[in-house]
Amino acid sequence: MRCHISKELKDLALKMSLVHGLPDKKIKRYTGISIRALKRLRQTYRETGETVRTPVCSGRPRNLDALDANFLEGCIERQPDCTLQELQTQLLEVCNIEVLRMTIWRTLRRSQKQVSDGHEFLILIPVPVPPASDIDF
Image 1 (cartoon, rainbow, N blue to C red):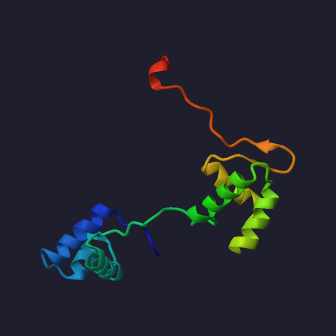
Image 2 (image 1 turned 90 degrees about the vertical axis):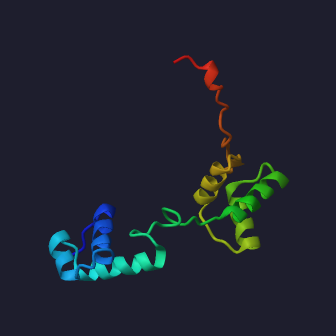
């Protein structure tokens, strides 16, 4: 059964193994880390120089990357009153990317653009915030 091993405990086990030369059975007895986990720990240290692997980015990858967002922004600049449906169609025809209209809306919201959903404009431009010096605390 898997359980989380803290970075401090991993560092200690690695030091016991590499610096002091203790056998895995003794390290397991002192720390409670399985022999297999100790082998993976040493392998990770050899590969990365660290005892823990840190992901390059957290979370799920986006359906639309920065290039796709730029394409959508260009479509809006060419036709400011375009709808999400029209953007969805253009994205499918030109970039061969099929996404939901909500995905397009969220992507444009992140880039602070505005777009029509077919009936009314969804305002995605943020309200300017006054400088901190103008705010009374």
